[in-house]
Image 1 (cartoon, rainbow, N blue to C red):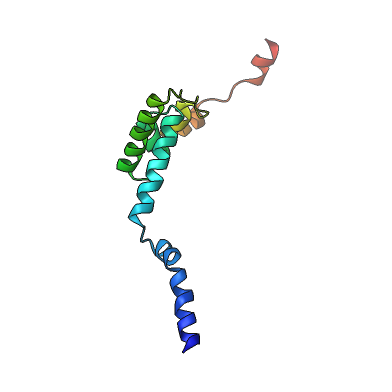
Image 2: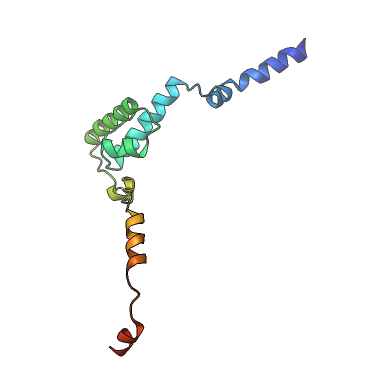
Amino acid sequence: MRTLLLAVLLLLTGCDQLKERAGIHDPARVEAEGKAIGGACRHAGRGLEDCYQLNPEASIPAIYAGWKEMTEYMAKNNIEAVEPTILPEALKPPAPAPKKKRKKADAEENDAPAPDKEKDAGH
């Protein structure tokens, strides 16, 4: 009986970890993490859009709440924003490379006459 009770208690201590691994997130934890992210973004002088872009997995309303709370706190205590270390250009995903019509370009290269080496060597 004691062994069974001990085994059940040990299994119940890991419930939070099992829920996280199963994809069931604790709403209070998600809210707290989002607020922390928002507050950190505001303290770093980042705009909300940059903060959302840097943390796509976080809750948008929680980020906004944390950002707003930090704004009020910083205004109340005369705290200046810290200069961000990642430039806004680095936040944007790279633009996709333009697709070239390789078949046409390859065909033109193959049809073009080979340059005359003798003419180029003399000049």
